[in-house]
Each structure stands twice: as C-alpha cells, then as structure tokens.
Amino acid sequence: MKKIMMVLMSLLVLLQVTNVVAQQADKAGCKDHSLFPTRMPDYEIENCKIEDFAAYEFQVKKGPKTRVEGKFTFITYAFKGKRETEPSGLAVVRNYENAIQKIGGTIVQSDPDRWVNGSIVKDGQETWFEVQKGNGKIWLRIVEKKAMEQAIVADATVFSNDIRATGHSAVYGIYFDTAKSTIKPESAQAIGEIAKMLKADPSLKIFVVGHTDNQGGVESNIKLSQDRGEAVLQVLVRDHGIAATRLRSYGCGLFSPVASNDSEDGRAKNRRVELVKQ
Picture 1 (tube, rainbow, N blue to C red):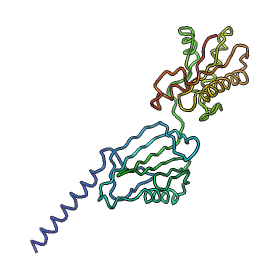
Picture 2 (cartoon, rainbow, N blue to C red):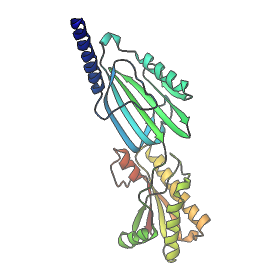
Picture 3 (tube, rainbow, N blue to C red):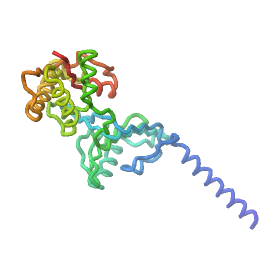
Picture 4 (cartoon, rainbow, N blue to C red):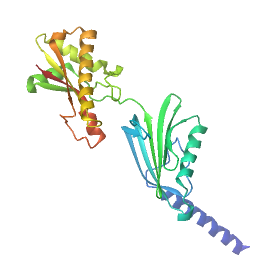
C-alpha cells in the first residue's frame, strides 16, 4: 500500500511539473487574445506585440488593402509537435473561419491554403483579424478599431508663433478618410484653431498645403494632397467666414517628409496639413 501511495505521489508531482512547463512554454508576458481564447494543438506563443494605437493593412486578393486603425495585437505561434502532425494551411484557415463565424463574425477575404481575414462587431466594438499560416508558424494579427486619442492639441497661438518664427506651421489633428479628401468630424477643433488665428490677424494670408506619405503612386499622392488642402480651405471659407482671397491651397504629395516613411509612426507624421505664409 505504501509503495502504491509513493507511485501515485510521484505521478502527481510529474503532472504538476508537466503543467508548469506547459504554462512556461509561451513567451513571458504573452497570452492568447480574447477573440480566439484557444489555439491549434501543439502550438506555443513564440512572440507577441501589443500597441495601443497602430494601423494594419489587411490583405486582399485584388485592389487596395483594407487599412484599419486601433489597438493592434500581433501574436506569433510556433509549432512544437512532430513534423508529420503539423496541420496544413487549409486546416488552420478553416479552423479560424469556423471560430469567427460561430460567434457572429464575417469572413472578408481568404486564400484557403495560406491566410484568412475578417471582422466582428460585438458590444459595439468592431474588431478585425488576420491569420497567416507559414512553415511551422501561425501569425495572428488583430485590430480593435478605435480613433486615436489626441494628445497634441492644435492651438491658434502655436500656429501664429510658428508662422512668425519660420513662415510655416504643421497642423496635426486634421483627419481624412483613407485615400480620400473627405474630412473626418474629429478635425473640427484643429480647423477651428486655424480660423481663430486668421481672425486674430486679418492681414495674414496663407497657403493651405496638403502632404501625404509615400504609399501609392506619385501622381495620385500629389492630387490627393492638393484635394485635401482645398478641402480644408473650403471649410475655413464656408464654416468660419474666412475670405477666400486670403487663402490658397497647394499639394506637396510625398515630397516634403518630416519623418521616415519606413514606419507607420513616420508615415502618420508625414500625412499632415501645413500653413505657409504667403
């Protein structure tokens, strides 16, 4: 009896150790996302990254990619089972397709043997995901869509001081629909501050200059930046009563970056409107 008890105790310790090892297999600080709380068998989290606000361009088979901004989670799963038991790309894609559809989500695009993406709206939160299958890896990207919390507030005094000191001032806080010149409602505060500056100095005339990042063609970016500058000009005239004779719009496209276009943070800085003294 004593021998049996010792064997049972040994087995219990072994199970506990095995469980701890399994829990420690994932990279420290990483865990499954709540959208997909379970994972494919024999996969461990090799790496993860969470950014409170970033953007990801979801794959499409044709046409422009779908860009979504918000809280970004990137998880890399590595297969640790026997090579011959690694699931196929189709098995991975179908598993994620079924999981998202089961909770009311929508499949947007897929390449059945390689990747799938889709979205779901739950409790008012729109969330996008993309899964890619590689050799021994699964890459999961999730964007919980939201607007950026504006930390830098556009201010009429700052614009005026910049123009007096350098002849121009960059305005952050004017937002447009992706690849369009349609101004988003959250831009009202920044444009209002431009109007406030112009009303405080009736003699001041400015160029309203649009700038883009380097995504897309050169000619299309020049036109887009021109259209965006003109859109801001029209709001100043129509909604704030600024005389059109005091304003001219212009577009620099991608030709005057203030940061590297190799990162999303840099591209965000380059997508701006500048006020230039005439």
